[in-house]
Image (cartoon, rainbow, N blue to C red; front, side, top):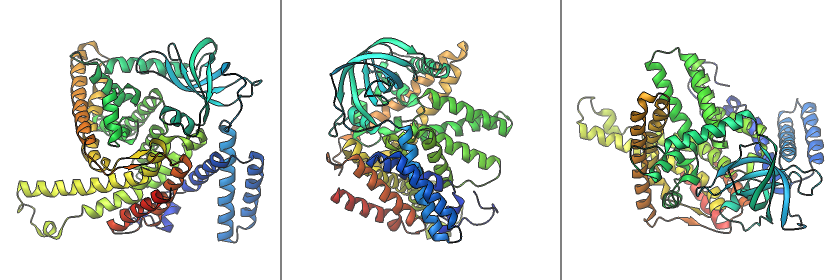
Length: 538
């Protein structure tokens, strides 16, 4: 855990520092084992037997530190692969007997289409006497969207997802789906969803309806706010979605640390102003944020952000220092223990790659780049004028922001190229403007939702929605202008998901290996060169 003496200097991310993040030894085997099983799908029995033997070997070699560590790492890798195999659906080609099928399907995820004509999502085949048993399907069905966890009898046209799939089909394939059921219709409900799932679906609908409520007629402005607060990019207008996607800033509409940390900070600030007891207020804020995560679909990035927020708050409440790397590893381990299939999720991969790069390289590089110059250190506090101080602050903000944005962009480039075929260099600069601006509609939307409970405050709440919609409209205009700039983007339609994940792992290893460097050129320059080499070879 944290160092015993809170006043002792932080040694940085050196070899000994990994002892202060023991969750890495749980997260890494689960992550690499899941990737191994997803890429090659070996026999689970062989992996379980090999992992057990390696664990016994590590126990027997306890007196030989290096050999025991190697055996323990191998045991974790094989057991992590076996856990992924057991908890995820089978993949690979299978010959269909007929294109039209009637199947019993457990709905994992469902959301309404933007046009309101049906819903899309993911589901498992639950018919044991069918060759498709436990296969995951991408669903496109007519009618109202069911709550997650409902078991339905569906009929529709069944087609395999090919390796050349792009767009929605590529995303579904990355989730482990082997086939797509299109033109589906519901024949009946075999089992209802849980009460919590139905409650979350109901709350999601109520929130979307409220967030679309503005003091004036502007359905697109309301859609932008609903997409921001609920993490549903499907609600974005076509032009806005294209602009944010072209500039690499579509992540602003995914529930992540930007949402969870911003909301937690605002709620804890309000609790302190109202003089609520610190620990009960913190627990209440965490509980409220967890319900928010559940209502918005519990995506891997939102779960990661909530777990990291919980550990940071617990460390401060207990007057202990919780390293960011430890919080990140705990969040990764918890996510993969609950849902090992998240290894293949694009949101999971991009979220963890970006945060790891920021922790290991972006934040240290930002501190170095934004350090006061000799002139600033020698200037008396009252000697510098307002304009000069403002220039210094702008310099610090730009340099630190570029380092953070650069680290996240470099780390996510292989995954972005593999999943979407394009990585925008313009996101480096556009994020500097859009990320601070995005906090405003989040806070306004959260305040308007709280005030919507009382009828007397509804007019004020609607104007708060209006202010958030105006801010989002300005962000959209800025993204549209930036999308027209001829940035030197990376584009490729031939990079596979396996190659993208391999590139991301190489960059993660590079960030961690040189995390102690005290040079911006080393912290960010070497990973950038490695990215260029990977792109040339991939």
